[in-house]
Structures are given as structure tokens and as C-alpha cells.
Image (cartoon, rainbow, N blue to C red):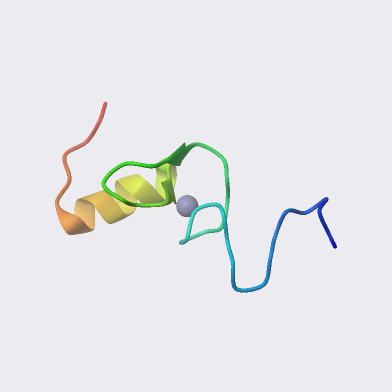
Length: 50
Ligand SMILES: [Zn+2]
């Protein structure tokens, strides 16, 4: 069942933008990695979390 990749068609556990599960952030109901979170955060208007 391709468990090695951990990727399912149409069902992504990781970042919904890039699909990675590295550095995931589960805040604000978003499923984004840190990189995408910064990009999307800027678009939406979230403050930087540094
Ligand atoms: Zn991402």
C-alpha cells in the first residue's frame, strides 16, 4: 500500500501546499510546513514567529 512513501492520492497528511511533513505547524487550523507557513502567513497577515 505504498506505506514507505506515506503519500495517499487525494489525502495528504503533510503540508497541504507542498505536501511535506517536515516542520509541520498545526496552528490556526493550518496544515502547513514552516516554509509555506511563512509564505502564506505573509499573505494572510500572520505575524512572523521568530
Ligand atoms: Zn509546505
